[in-house]
Amino acid sequence: MERGEGRGAPRSESLREDSIASGRRDDVRPAPQEPSIGTPRGEIGEIARWLLGVIERMELGPFQIGENAESEMLVIDVTGPAARALATGDGRPVDALGLLANQAATRTDIDGPRIVLEVEGDTESREVLLSRLAEKGARRARETGRAVALDPMNGKDRRIIHLALRDEDGIATMSIGEGRYRQVVVVPAGAPEYDQARRDAAASASRNEA
Image (cartoon, rainbow, N blue to C red; front, side, top):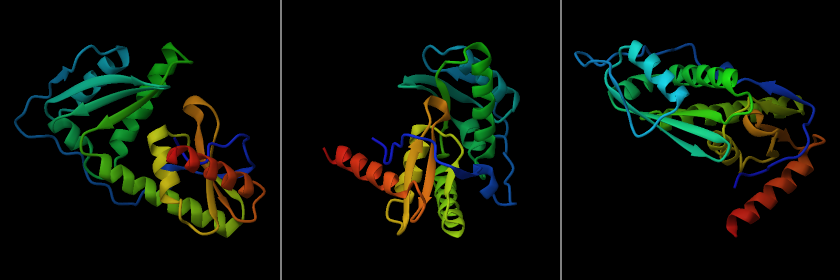
């Protein structure tokens, strides 16, 4: 259960995840002398097959791709040499593929599940990126005295943000929105939403302990 599942949309600033990316970008390097062939892991649907073709054309080496439905999400996971090449650097190639997959999915079913792309080797770098985003959101909230809304993200990423700011003095977090548009709001002490965010966080922590 996530911390701070909020109710109404507060008046807030917005902070895009890509605004924290550094100027440095490592190239995605193909695995040498290995054919770029994707192998489905079990049955996969239209979007996973589309991603399979895209990654094959990137010529990063062999990989396996599978999918699993989780609540409001369809998790597509990629493993193997191509996955590790994709995960190199700041994670932007993975984010870009995830965005394209979601755009492709909404063209066929606007009310369908959110696509979450998980790539072998990117977990640690993703957590670092999200922790930096959380810190930047908290700093902006303190400087302005206003709540800061982060970009919509999946439940796993929202939980990382909540946990990263759990012990920050004078900062509370809550989630707003529905489905694929759900997002974390970082609320500073003194903002109108602060007490509500603290109550939501306490209620969520209590449910987790139970």
